[in-house]
Amino acid sequence: MNKKTYLKYPLMLLFACCAGFASADVNLSTLQNISTHKVINIGYRDAPPYSYKTSDGQVTGYDIALCQDITESLKTELKLSDLTINYVPVPLTMRTTMLNQHSIDMDCSVNTDTVKRENVVLFSRHYLFVNTRVAVQSGNGVQSYSDLAGKTVSVARGSSDLVNINQLNRVQKLNILVLSQPTMKEAFDMLSDRKCFATIINDVSLRQLVESSGNPAQYTVSDAVFGNPQNLGIMLRHDDTEFKNIIDKALLARFERPDFKQFYEQWFNRPLPGKNINLHIPLTSNMHKYLTRKAS
View 1 (cartoon, one colour):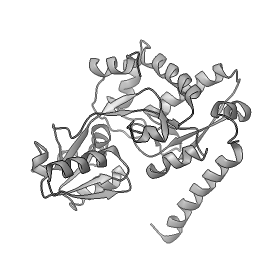
View 2 (cartoon, rainbow, N blue to C red):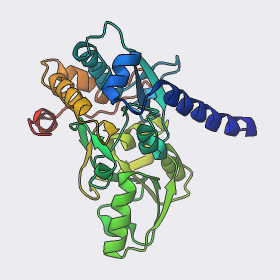
View 3 (tube, one colour):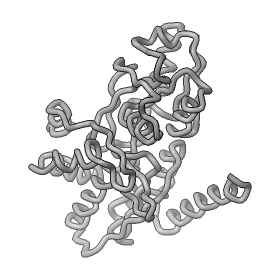
Protein backbone atom coordinates (compact mmCIF):
# COMPACT_ATOMS: atom_id res chain seq x y z
CA MET A 1 0.00 0.00 0.00
CA ASN A 2 1.48 3.33 -1.01
CA LYS A 3 1.59 6.57 0.97
CA LYS A 4 -1.35 8.07 -0.92
CA THR A 5 -3.55 5.13 0.04
CA TYR A 6 -2.59 5.47 3.70
CA LEU A 7 -3.56 9.14 3.59
CA LYS A 8 -6.70 8.58 1.61
CA TYR A 9 -8.54 6.31 4.07
CA PRO A 10 -8.41 8.64 7.10
CA LEU A 11 -9.56 11.51 4.89
CA MET A 12 -12.47 9.43 3.58
CA LEU A 13 -13.39 8.48 7.13
CA LEU A 14 -13.24 12.11 8.24
CA PHE A 15 -15.45 13.10 5.34
CA ALA A 16 -17.98 10.39 6.27
CA CYS A 17 -18.01 11.60 9.87
CA CYS A 18 -18.50 15.22 8.82
CA ALA A 19 -21.30 14.21 6.47
CA GLY A 20 -23.02 12.56 9.42
CA PHE A 21 -22.65 15.70 11.53
CA ALA A 22 -24.13 17.83 8.75
CA SER A 23 -27.29 15.74 8.40
CA ALA A 24 -27.96 14.92 12.07
CA ASP A 25 -29.38 17.32 14.63
CA VAL A 26 -28.04 16.15 17.99
CA ASN A 27 -30.97 17.86 19.73
CA LEU A 28 -33.37 15.45 18.04
CA SER A 29 -33.79 11.76 18.80
CA THR A 30 -32.57 9.20 16.27
CA LEU A 31 -36.14 8.49 15.16
CA GLN A 32 -36.84 12.22 14.76
CA ASN A 33 -33.71 12.65 12.64
CA ILE A 34 -34.60 9.66 10.47
CA SER A 35 -38.16 10.92 10.04
CA THR A 36 -37.01 14.47 9.20
CA HIS A 37 -34.22 13.62 6.76
CA LYS A 38 -35.62 10.30 5.45
CA VAL A 39 -32.11 8.85 5.70
CA ILE A 40 -30.70 6.20 8.01
CA ASN A 41 -26.93 5.88 8.46
CA ILE A 42 -25.92 2.24 8.94
CA GLY A 43 -22.41 1.40 10.09
CA TYR A 44 -20.68 -1.71 8.76
CA ARG A 45 -17.21 -3.14 8.26
CA ASP A 46 -15.58 -5.97 6.34
CA ALA A 47 -16.59 -8.91 8.53
CA PRO A 48 -18.29 -11.68 6.49
CA PRO A 49 -20.83 -13.17 6.93
CA TYR A 50 -22.10 -10.37 9.16
CA SER A 51 -21.37 -7.44 6.83
CA TYR A 52 -19.15 -6.89 3.82
CA LYS A 53 -18.95 -5.25 0.41
CA THR A 54 -19.01 -7.39 -2.73
CA SER A 55 -16.82 -6.78 -5.77
CA ASP A 56 -19.66 -4.87 -7.45
CA GLY A 57 -19.84 -2.45 -4.52
CA GLN A 58 -22.96 -3.84 -2.83
CA VAL A 59 -23.02 -3.91 0.99
CA THR A 60 -24.48 -7.21 2.16
CA GLY A 61 -24.36 -9.83 4.91
CA TYR A 62 -26.51 -11.43 7.62
CA ASP A 63 -26.55 -8.30 9.78
CA ILE A 64 -27.15 -6.06 6.79
CA ALA A 65 -30.17 -8.15 5.72
CA LEU A 66 -31.54 -7.90 9.27
CA CYS A 67 -31.01 -4.13 9.24
CA GLN A 68 -32.82 -3.89 5.90
CA ASP A 69 -35.80 -5.56 7.61
CA ILE A 70 -35.54 -2.94 10.34
CA THR A 71 -35.53 -0.19 7.72
CA GLU A 72 -38.79 -1.51 6.28
CA SER A 73 -40.29 -1.55 9.79
CA LEU A 74 -39.15 2.04 10.33
CA LYS A 75 -40.92 3.14 7.16
CA THR A 76 -44.15 1.71 8.56
CA GLU A 77 -43.67 3.04 12.09
CA LEU A 78 -42.69 6.53 10.92
CA LYS A 79 -45.19 6.57 8.02
CA LEU A 80 -42.48 7.19 5.42
CA SER A 81 -43.01 6.34 1.78
CA ASP A 82 -39.25 6.14 1.26
CA LEU A 83 -36.18 5.81 3.44
CA THR A 84 -32.65 6.03 2.04
CA ILE A 85 -29.97 3.76 3.52
CA ASN A 86 -26.54 5.33 3.77
CA TYR A 87 -23.90 2.66 4.47
CA VAL A 88 -20.93 4.05 6.40
CA PRO A 89 -17.67 2.05 6.81
CA VAL A 90 -16.76 1.96 10.51
CA PRO A 91 -13.39 0.75 11.85
CA LEU A 92 -13.75 -1.66 14.78
CA THR A 93 -12.21 0.74 17.28
CA MET A 94 -14.36 3.71 16.09
CA ARG A 95 -17.85 2.17 16.32
CA THR A 96 -18.76 3.62 19.74
CA THR A 97 -17.33 7.04 18.89
CA MET A 98 -19.13 7.25 15.55
CA LEU A 99 -22.41 6.21 17.17
CA ASN A 100 -22.19 8.77 19.94
CA GLN A 101 -21.12 11.51 17.54
CA HIS A 102 -24.19 10.75 15.38
CA SER A 103 -22.12 9.72 12.36
CA ILE A 104 -24.13 6.49 12.26
CA ASP A 105 -27.56 5.56 13.66
CA MET A 106 -26.80 1.89 14.29
CA ASP A 107 -23.83 -0.41 13.81
CA CYS A 108 -24.83 -3.47 11.77
CA SER A 109 -21.76 -5.62 12.05
CA VAL A 110 -20.37 -8.10 14.57
CA ASN A 111 -20.78 -6.54 18.04
CA THR A 112 -20.55 -8.45 21.32
CA ASP A 113 -22.95 -7.35 24.05
CA THR A 114 -20.90 -6.96 27.25
CA VAL A 115 -21.59 -5.37 30.62
CA LYS A 116 -18.78 -2.87 30.07
CA ARG A 117 -20.13 -1.78 26.68
CA GLU A 118 -23.66 -1.45 28.03
CA ASN A 119 -22.39 1.47 30.09
CA VAL A 120 -21.82 3.52 26.92
CA VAL A 121 -24.06 2.00 24.21
CA LEU A 122 -27.33 0.10 23.85
CA PHE A 123 -27.78 -3.29 22.19
CA SER A 124 -30.71 -4.76 20.30
CA ARG A 125 -32.02 -8.20 21.18
CA HIS A 126 -29.36 -10.71 20.22
CA TYR A 127 -29.18 -12.02 16.67
CA LEU A 128 -26.56 -14.76 17.26
CA PHE A 129 -24.23 -16.25 19.84
CA VAL A 130 -20.67 -17.31 19.06
CA ASN A 131 -17.74 -18.86 20.94
CA THR A 132 -14.07 -17.94 21.09
CA ARG A 133 -11.96 -20.67 19.50
CA VAL A 134 -8.32 -21.15 18.58
CA ALA A 135 -6.82 -21.92 15.15
CA VAL A 136 -3.35 -23.34 14.67
CA GLN A 137 -1.33 -24.69 11.79
CA SER A 138 -2.29 -28.33 11.06
CA GLY A 139 0.04 -30.64 12.92
CA ASN A 140 -0.27 -28.59 16.08
CA GLY A 141 -3.12 -29.09 18.48
CA VAL A 142 -4.95 -27.19 21.19
CA GLN A 143 -7.10 -29.38 23.41
CA SER A 144 -7.22 -26.97 26.35
CA TYR A 145 -5.94 -23.57 27.44
CA SER A 146 -2.82 -25.19 28.93
CA ASP A 147 -1.61 -25.97 25.38
CA LEU A 148 -1.20 -22.20 24.86
CA ALA A 149 1.16 -21.76 27.84
CA GLY A 150 4.29 -19.86 26.84
CA LYS A 151 3.09 -19.49 23.22
CA THR A 152 2.55 -16.42 21.02
CA VAL A 153 -1.03 -15.79 19.89
CA SER A 154 -2.71 -13.14 17.74
CA VAL A 155 -6.12 -11.57 18.35
CA ALA A 156 -8.13 -8.60 17.06
CA ARG A 157 -7.79 -5.37 19.02
CA GLY A 158 -10.98 -4.22 20.75
CA SER A 159 -12.62 -7.68 20.47
CA SER A 160 -14.22 -9.81 23.16
CA ASP A 161 -11.79 -12.53 22.11
CA LEU A 162 -8.98 -10.31 23.39
CA VAL A 163 -10.80 -9.86 26.69
CA ASN A 164 -11.27 -13.63 27.00
CA ILE A 165 -7.65 -14.55 26.33
CA ASN A 166 -6.25 -11.77 28.53
CA GLN A 167 -8.42 -12.90 31.43
CA LEU A 168 -7.46 -16.55 30.91
CA ASN A 169 -3.79 -15.60 30.64
CA ARG A 170 -3.94 -13.62 33.87
CA VAL A 171 -5.97 -16.06 35.95
CA GLN A 172 -4.17 -19.21 34.84
CA LYS A 173 -0.70 -17.57 34.72
CA LEU A 174 -0.03 -19.03 31.27
CA ASN A 175 2.66 -16.55 30.20
CA ILE A 176 1.05 -16.20 26.75
CA LEU A 177 2.43 -13.42 24.54
CA VAL A 178 -0.68 -11.77 23.09
CA LEU A 179 -0.20 -9.80 19.85
CA SER A 180 -3.25 -7.58 19.23
CA GLN A 181 -3.93 -6.67 15.60
CA PRO A 182 -6.22 -3.98 14.10
CA THR A 183 -8.62 -6.53 12.54
CA MET A 184 -9.54 -10.22 12.69
CA LYS A 185 -8.10 -10.65 9.18
CA GLU A 186 -4.76 -9.23 10.27
CA ALA A 187 -4.78 -11.47 13.35
CA PHE A 188 -5.40 -14.49 11.11
CA ASP A 189 -2.66 -13.37 8.71
CA MET A 190 -0.20 -13.56 11.59
CA LEU A 191 -0.96 -17.28 11.82
CA SER A 192 -0.83 -17.74 8.03
CA ASP A 193 2.60 -16.10 7.95
CA ARG A 194 3.73 -18.28 10.88
CA LYS A 195 4.42 -15.23 13.04
CA CYS A 196 2.48 -16.74 15.94
CA PHE A 197 1.54 -20.18 17.23
CA ALA A 198 -2.22 -19.58 17.22
CA THR A 199 -4.93 -17.03 16.49
CA ILE A 200 -7.98 -16.52 18.68
CA ILE A 201 -11.24 -15.41 17.02
CA ASN A 202 -14.98 -16.02 17.37
CA ASP A 203 -15.84 -19.30 15.67
CA VAL A 204 -18.01 -17.89 12.86
CA SER A 205 -15.43 -15.32 11.75
CA LEU A 206 -12.67 -17.89 12.19
CA ARG A 207 -14.48 -20.34 9.93
CA GLN A 208 -14.85 -17.62 7.30
CA LEU A 209 -11.15 -16.79 7.42
CA VAL A 210 -10.12 -20.44 7.20
CA GLU A 211 -12.45 -21.10 4.26
CA SER A 212 -11.22 -17.94 2.50
CA SER A 213 -7.55 -18.81 2.96
CA GLY A 214 -7.26 -20.89 -0.21
CA ASN A 215 -6.00 -23.86 1.80
CA PRO A 216 -8.42 -24.71 4.64
CA ALA A 217 -6.62 -28.01 5.30
CA GLN A 218 -3.61 -25.97 6.47
CA TYR A 219 -5.44 -25.06 9.70
CA THR A 220 -6.98 -26.84 12.67
CA VAL A 221 -9.70 -25.17 14.73
CA SER A 222 -10.07 -26.19 18.37
CA ASP A 223 -13.10 -28.07 19.64
CA ALA A 224 -12.43 -26.36 22.96
CA VAL A 225 -13.95 -22.92 23.54
CA PHE A 226 -12.33 -20.16 25.58
CA GLY A 227 -14.43 -17.99 27.87
CA ASN A 228 -18.20 -17.64 27.86
CA PRO A 229 -20.38 -17.54 24.72
CA GLN A 230 -20.61 -14.08 23.13
CA ASN A 231 -24.06 -12.59 22.55
CA LEU A 232 -24.15 -10.47 19.41
CA GLY A 233 -26.49 -7.53 18.85
CA ILE A 234 -26.93 -4.38 16.80
CA MET A 235 -25.20 -1.48 18.55
CA LEU A 236 -27.17 1.73 19.25
CA ARG A 237 -26.74 4.98 21.14
CA HIS A 238 -27.24 4.57 24.87
CA ASP A 239 -30.51 6.54 25.09
CA ASP A 240 -32.17 5.04 21.98
CA THR A 241 -34.74 2.90 23.83
CA GLU A 242 -37.60 3.84 21.50
CA PHE A 243 -35.49 2.95 18.49
CA LYS A 244 -34.43 -0.31 20.19
CA ASN A 245 -38.07 -1.30 20.71
CA ILE A 246 -38.76 -1.03 16.97
CA ILE A 247 -35.56 -2.94 16.14
CA ASP A 248 -36.29 -5.73 18.62
CA LYS A 249 -39.80 -6.16 17.26
CA ALA A 250 -38.50 -6.37 13.67
CA LEU A 251 -35.79 -8.88 14.61
CA LEU A 252 -38.18 -11.17 16.47
CA ALA A 253 -40.60 -11.03 13.53
CA ARG A 254 -37.79 -12.19 11.22
CA PHE A 255 -36.69 -14.98 13.57
CA GLU A 256 -40.27 -16.27 13.90
CA ARG A 257 -40.97 -16.38 10.17
CA PRO A 258 -41.53 -19.87 8.69
CA ASP A 259 -38.74 -19.26 6.16
CA PHE A 260 -36.15 -18.18 8.75
CA LYS A 261 -34.14 -21.42 8.37
CA GLN A 262 -33.63 -20.68 4.67
CA PHE A 263 -32.73 -17.07 5.48
CA TYR A 264 -30.19 -18.12 8.13
CA GLU A 265 -28.58 -20.80 6.00
CA GLN A 266 -28.16 -18.37 3.11
CA TRP A 267 -25.42 -16.78 5.24
CA PHE A 268 -24.10 -19.70 7.27
CA ASN A 269 -24.65 -22.93 5.34
CA ARG A 270 -24.53 -21.98 1.65
CA PRO A 271 -21.99 -20.20 -0.57
CA LEU A 272 -21.79 -16.58 0.61
CA PRO A 273 -22.98 -14.07 -2.02
CA GLY A 274 -19.95 -12.61 -3.76
CA LYS A 275 -17.53 -14.82 -1.79
CA ASN A 276 -18.08 -18.37 -3.09
CA ILE A 277 -17.24 -19.93 0.28
CA ASN A 278 -19.48 -22.00 2.55
CA LEU A 279 -19.14 -21.81 6.34
CA HIS A 280 -21.08 -25.07 6.86
CA ILE A 281 -22.81 -23.87 10.05
CA PRO A 282 -26.43 -25.09 9.88
CA LEU A 283 -29.18 -23.65 12.04
CA THR A 284 -29.54 -25.79 15.15
CA SER A 285 -32.65 -26.11 17.30
CA ASN A 286 -30.62 -24.61 20.16
CA MET A 287 -29.79 -21.52 18.11
CA HIS A 288 -33.37 -21.12 16.93
CA LYS A 289 -34.71 -21.32 20.48
CA TYR A 290 -32.13 -18.73 21.52
CA LEU A 291 -33.18 -16.34 18.76
CA THR A 292 -36.93 -16.68 19.30
CA ARG A 293 -36.92 -16.48 23.11
CA LYS A 294 -39.33 -13.79 24.31
CA ALA A 295 -36.91 -12.08 26.72
CA SER A 296 -33.97 -10.30 25.04
